[in-house]
Image (cartoon, rainbow, N blue to C red):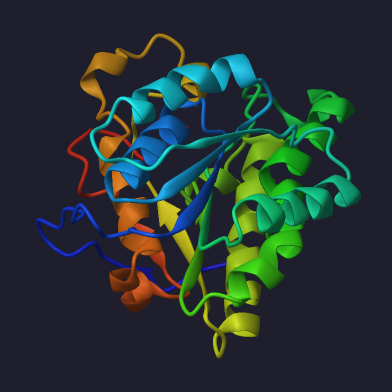
Length: 265
């Protein structure tokens, strides 16, 4: 699945009020990209709903946001993408409505990657779990929250992709299949919502320091890679009203992060 490409405007930086008054949910908020996105959204004025498997892992991100001057207080929300049922996603959407009254954006920053391995040797449980976290869970969460999102005059969902050229190569297994499927989900959902207030976006970071990258590229000197701050700023752009220009497209940052490789993994 090939999505049309968009570019981040040159020298774009979020205004302090770019997301003022908005509520944004970030999955995998304790991870490298998720935490950077959460902090960037808070700096831009959003109330950030921090989701992840363990509250303890989310607390440092919560504290970092709470320490920002004038940033809205974030909200901690445990969410096990691996084990949550469709009913639990619906319950989460109802909780957001009752406690926060609105939802203006979602950034699907959570990811599962175990190892590079031939399909013939891939543990079936790893296959099922990887597909679920990287593809099925983003669909289920988005579907449950669509009524909330479409009540807003302008809302956005951001799906994080990985290098499409590499994802079809040997040994990328369930992770590669899931990311390819995620691109298809973006395309289909965009076509189905293009006339609504809900915008659908894909974000393709360049290589960056992350636990996922370390597992895929064992022995690489991660100090040579960019930090997740650039893709985090790009996520704010897509969530903001200015991101409308990239609706239904993939915002490709691979040539803008200044590192010598491709993709996240």
